[in-house]
Image (cartoon, rainbow, N blue to C red; front, side):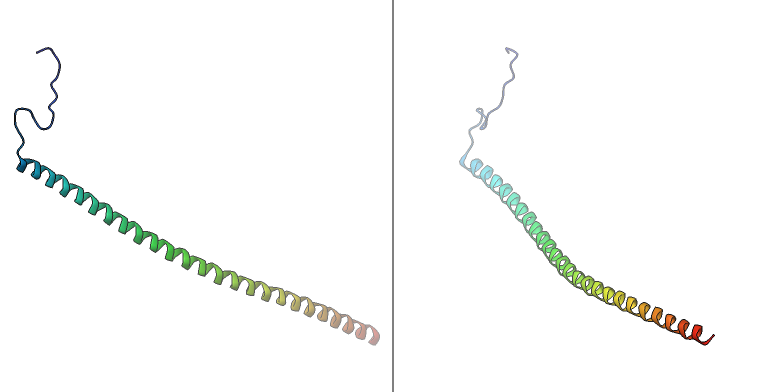
Length: 108
């Protein structure tokens, strides 16, 4: 030997591969390829289901956001109306207090 490694090539030179061997090898390779394809298809289906679920969640969140924005607008408008009514009541109370003081001072 000259120190070099000998690399076996397919088919091995010592043995002639029969047609049956070639077909068996091709069938195994085909079966492996089909199994890999089936696995990839299943992973894709799972990913699609995940995407559909996420899309549904995004839609639900969008609906919730729109509803909450509407409720916030209504609450803000109500708070402004209550604030205006509160100012009006405070002015009326101040006016009533001034009137009562005037009557009391007049009576003394």
